[in-house]
Length: 474
Ligand code: FAD
Image (cartoon, rainbow, N blue to C red; front, side, top):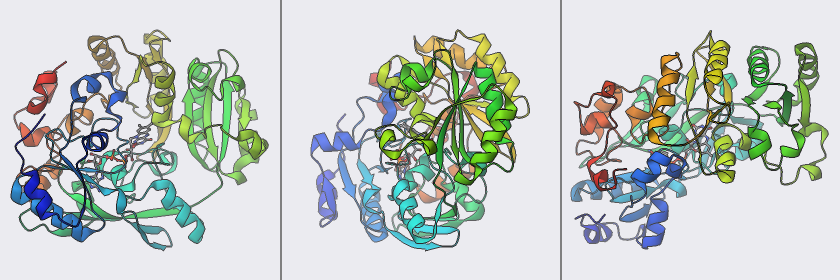
């Protein structure tokens, strides 16, 4: 995949900046967790950039995008590369803009932190906890390695969403600084409604160079695993616990048997055969109330309580964070490469009936239950991240169709474009901002269908294929 870019000219223009053209390192930084999806794996495996550039500050970002704009070279921003839809992969080659060095935490105050986009979320929390007992409201399960800029541009929510909803809900991001891709790049400060221009836009319409995030009170969250006789009981428990206004949790994750027994290798001895579980992160002061809630609910057996196990005996045991959200899939994939997953919304108020009906519709070994309870528009409901035993693309599409026909929309994690992975429609705000901020279409090409092919019909059932990927068509 060689392209006619003037990389020699670009290197001269960027003299003094951190540049990397070692092919092995460029290839490494051109990849993310796209291989999670058997579909994306076959489509994107050959994707590679030409040069990795690592800016240290906003002025260097401006210099890089100005030079790339002048030379017509695409720029694909990258945080830690943990996105699992190929979001950070440079489909047209060019520059991989590695934001990892812009990681300074510059301000912490009551309820807010300001930092560079490359700051790792666990490191932000370590700093805000030490400063004033505060932490981020939510984070993905890749908390230990993922950057905050990558979360804003490529993620959606995660641990903490049971209290705070999704990342794009009003108030969950305070402001961002963005550099545009123009002849004279502008440095903009976006707040309020303008945040929607770049949130979850995969870096297709601006480079985020600083973020300001809201904070909440930090706790020494206690990991608890509760066992149930079946998945329906686990789901009911998760829903009822989410509705307990006085019991402070940060994670409520029902997972069906045999997932914990097969794939949670370090925990499997704790989970009886046939038991489904709910993973909970609980505030320490809520323990008594939680124990009472379990007793009243009935049929809930506490299988593991990290607060009751000496630290030394927990060594090597993954935390509930790293068993939940997309880490559930990761654990399964490590044991069985034939596993993949879907992202399902079970709309309020019928979420439990829908979960039950959908799981009854499929063999237990083909669609394995995994729910994440969240607060969605002020109500408790759940997303599903069911594990799927992959046979072929046609069957995967059939499983998706059955979910949608039964009333559970799918956010398809087997698509690399914004629209097909999301609402299957153009985001007019993001498209308009791209016209303004990236008029040559050089930022992360191929990820916004509305830009490349305005006539593409999302209702056609066809998958959009970016032209540079044609030869590797599966
Ligand atoms: P990257 O993967 O590097 O980038 C993500 C996107 O943001 C790309 O499109 C990239 O071009 C763009 N980007 C990066 N930095 C910038 C910038 N400064 N300016 C503009 N654009 C930029 N996601 C969730 O939302 N919730 C989860 O719970 C979750 N769990 C996961 C678990 C596993 C095991 C895996 C593999 C993935 C998971 N993800 C989850 C997806 C991903 O880890 C997160 O969204 C993460 O926050 C991405 O951060 P990153 O630094 O790795 O971003």
